[in-house]
Length: 391
Ligand code: TGC
Ligand code: FAD
Image (cartoon, rainbow, N blue to C red; front, side):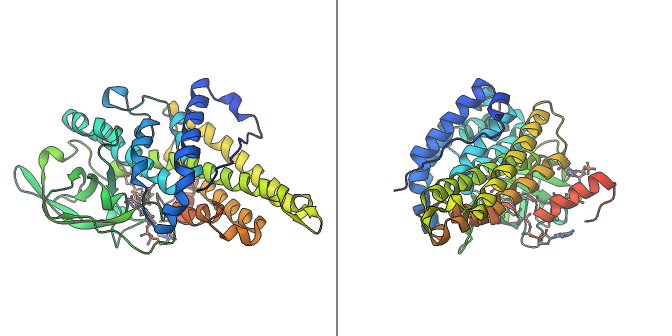
């Protein structure tokens, strides 16, 4: 059983930019993480198992669909609230934040934005309540960074479409109740649809042997002549714009989430450096260790400001995909660097499960790859500033 000693860090008084509601949400999620998540997560990560008993609590703290309107079971909150929830969850574990991001941004968001009224009413309240868990199938075995080349396809059969193909590296897949899936129709247009567990020919084998995101279940979505009723297709959206719009929301949440992981590593390293004595003095008294800690809080503070501003723009519906890419790329790289430096401050203790740092570090190796790799986000910025695509 692990005790979570995390203390609040706010070097640039960023709390003054938050509303009372934002702070209350942060306190609620932080308290839940300390009480329910931190004490058990290391064991689940070691066993490579998703702690399903957390699903009810995630729903209760509003982590499923925070910005979806209350009429559909969501919380009707703003984008900064969504970010804060992702930050606090990822301070606990990136895998648990993943489950909440997928459910909110990659399943509820497309159903709310592109779904018919019947689809909204059928799925959203149950997803918000955690009664159903969703997954999002875009990546394929041969098409990751380039999803536009996907080969998963549908054929029009009258009342239904026949879905064939496979999606790979899908968070929540092994236990999902439904999946938002993107596939090409006979005219090569990308269509989105909801595929439900139990539909004949739909299987979700788990991907074993991950060293990263071990407390999150990852798997495949395999479609072998699955009959998907036409009422399950999103009626109007066509093309890559559909799935990429969902990624804008998830990438934004990850930008906040990565700050949470970085804060947790910094907090642990700072406390350890003040308590650990070598050569008769706390290691925090040595300049080399102070350099590491000072650089950590500097980078965290820069990321907090970037992300808060992005949240403001998102609230005003003015955040561009390229701005979101910049924040996702910067913040995940920042968190990975901090995790590596923090681990060194703990010496040998840093490699053990006694502290969360190594788990954060390994988790972030997935976060830097999914939702667009570090390099792809750089190319998105490059394209935005030059007007020239280098893909
Ligand atoms: P391109 O020709 O540039 O664009 C095709 C159409 O899409 C539009 N578009 C966007 N729309 C909304 N948001 C965005 N961010 C958009 N980016 C592009 C674009 O305007 C165009 O629209 P239209 O109407 O003119 O057709 O597309 P491309 O094929 O050259 O690819 C561009 C690229 C490389 C940026 C894109 O494909 C990409 O982002 N690749 C990375 C793939 C990725 O991020 N996959 C993530 C899979 S999901 C996941 O990882 C979940 S992990 C979750 C967890 O566990 O937390
Ligand atoms: P590739 O696209 O093969 O890229 C390999 C390398 O080549 C990367 O370094 C990349 O940056 C580089 N590269 C590619 N193209 C270019 C280029 N044009 N120029 C320069 N460099 C380039 N996907 C989903 O759809 N749903 C999910 O829920 C989901 N969850 C995931 C969970 C985990 C734990 C992981 C690890 C992945 C998940 N993914 C999911 C998949 C993820 O989005 C992809 O792994 C990611 O988009 C990269 O695709 P890829 O792994 O095929 O790498």
